[in-house]
Image (cartoon, rainbow, N blue to C red; front, side):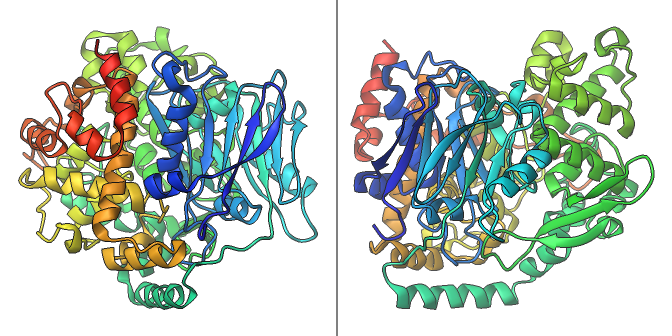
Length: 627
């Protein structure tokens, strides 16, 4: 099984039993890897219990999965996924991370780890090539992610080689609904609350080390494709600016086009703020660059704030999503302050997108009189007040004071407040939208509405195609796609989702450096690694199968057409800025999308669609659920 180790580690935290189980060829051929295999495993493990399983119950499996490219030296392929039912949305949960964990897991001889049950006491899982152990973690419980990482890397170092570590902080232990899992400090499984699932299982960390090697099936073709991609990356302007300014490289252009959300999505431009938060502005705190396994781009920032109120030790710097969720969304025009807020979220184990959006929502409600000091424990919430935001982050992680409400996310807080407050939350399927405005790029609006895990810009590749930074004419996306138009966007999103299920979440290519790939590069690389001669048609069909299975999981959990909607906040026309007056035509795009997908009015796929993808057993479950 070239590209795969051929086995999974299955861990029952309740009994402490661990066993190695084979990874079947049927799974790799039909679901490829990553969250594709993760979705099939979750569906099979839960069976008839899928509908009623509580995300915090021991029955909710937590599944870490690599893909066939994990551990290879193909550029921008250091990703892996973790999957479970999400406590934030109650639906399919998925988070993706770079760094070194995926490669180390493959080098240890495993394609994935299936964790079931819950431990009666805190434990951590130590995985090696020869032996795996569940070890006591009571002395680690309550510690922040950086401290825990340092302790475990020293404890389990093999000479000068440190293991890859993935840990939760206080937020995960306290089941904050959007708690993250931190890997080697600067990489995060951020979205959908997977850290809270770990906390519910009393699992503090994974420690992984291995010394194996991944051998491609066709070494000659593999080397040819790898060298071609390396040449493209060397010449790529995008790769160069990602190295210079990180993921914050496009903030100025995004502001001009209306792509950057400002003041809880209600302001169209903010020139002074953007100039204080763009890539150049963060040079004032930049001390270095970091990267993921075998990636030449080095887009990760290393920052330090040497003095002042927001003094921060040298460590991982904020990404674009954090800079905007706390910077532009909360109107904090200060690189030092945002670096500090990012550092505290990283150490406490919080998804910065959901956290920043929830705080921005609370500030907005306070300004509009929908919240008062009686609700906030005496805190005055004001735009631009980084000190108060810092206090809120600390409260959220331990669910103290007003932080207990904020820990639920903006949708549940809006429900609690009721009435007008519901108009100012920015969630799809209860998950806060990432920092790209669908009024600037209408296809992004449809992608958010129909994304499986909740508002998401990464589960497909429509954003890159719509922005013009990725070319996929070979799969039928040869047209130009003007951002502020709803024409042809349904086909764009549908095909981008199908391709992305294999590209981004199956083979696990990073969507940043991955923009240098075209469909032929990807097809040849996938064939060379696995030894199976993939066609583009087979790739799209596999992606469609994965997407439809994840969709079916949501349908079985009760989320259908009513959940395929954008909140009012993201569709109301702005009066100024690059997207002024623009509104995505969601009704038109959804109608066309449903037709392309073969959905009925309730958002369910037809029997013909499901049987055509080999999902007859899933179809049977859907039919039973509707009786």
